[in-house]
Length: 75
Image (cartoon, rainbow, N blue to C red; front, top):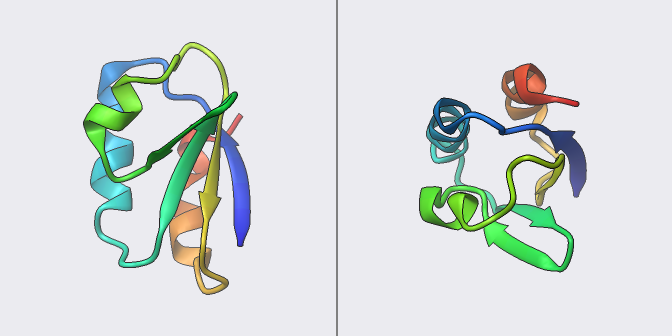
């Protein structure tokens, strides 16, 4: 498992983030405090407080391509 902190303050960033994560078949979750949602769910992401940094947990060791794409959201 790998994790990275991201910022998704704009709704367009949330949409782009979900589009990226949906193309991967392994589990990806986002944590905000005590809440954990599926990173591939746009409704799940909008239920979180996106004004604060979020933690993305990627449940795969072969995810360098995804990490490269998520760099634009990194905090």
